[in-house]
Image (cartoon, rainbow, N blue to C red; front, side, top):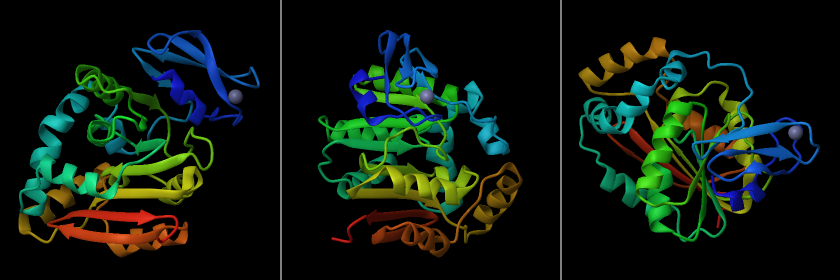
Length: 267
Ligand SMILES: [Zn+2]
């Protein structure tokens, strides 16, 4: 956790400012300005999560260390290819992201960051940006932190819930959501929180998986559905973005991989 990033955060319970209480950004604790709530920093990760345990199977599977290990190594590279019937490698994803998030100043938030793939893309492209990745699953965050430390990228990883983001209102210059809407519950609350933390000139990039059209893709998606992974009709999501104040700048679908870029201003 980069302690300079505390300025963007607020207590998820009483919404007052957070400051370092004991220790440092590796091991220590932060406390809110009302002096009521204290949160630990362990292995460089700030744990702000006090919400109930995840209820869907996809969210539960993210709680396991093996899932965290396999996510970027297996699930991301292979599942996308099988379900979409087309190659979609990280270089291509990184290029799309770099084009969408141009020279951000201030804070970029990676929402439900998993192993921090997008957070690292942005940290590599824009070393002066402050980057916070949040996720509910500690094993995912530990793997994300390990990868960021190995790559010497100053990313702050925080355990928090996308339905109650720990950022102050209007602080995020950029927001990225990489595939995680497919695994989230209560999307209207997530969209409301994303809109709340967005700065007036903010850019949002969302990658999500749409309904498959190939034979094998449909079979795999049917098998994943009971586990809490939803595959979208993009128009439904676009309507929710527009409803919460975003202007859609671009929307492209490759296979089942859907990217949408939106801004607050429409400019
Ligand atoms: Zn508090």
